[in-house]
Image (cartoon, rainbow, N blue to C red; front, side, top):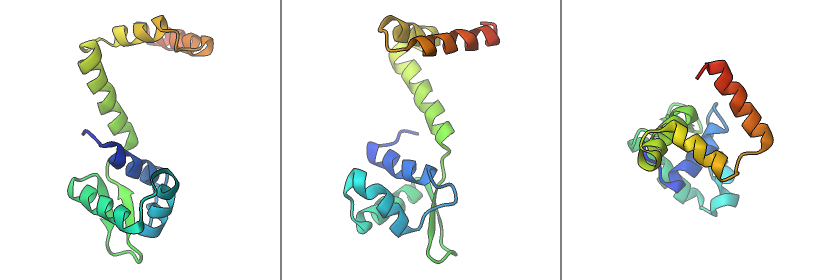
Length: 121
């Protein structure tokens, strides 16, 4: 599932509140980052429900909005897409790129080493 940046922002707010948010709470959670009005947030939530990204509990008063997609599932799909598009499916090439460009700290490199040792790769 490919999310637009705006859809991801909405889902980030909903992921932070697994019990769901009312419209006003969702608008408030997004206001500082987006500046969106309550109506704009409602438009996004409604469109995202149609796409299967958000569920709306219409029996609750006020209605509760929840992410219909788990953050972990979205992140896994994004990783797979990155691996395929940029590294031709090679996780080793991805890790090597991080190691070569120096973006990993010494602590992160040690953690990676430990994880690989535990996996017996």
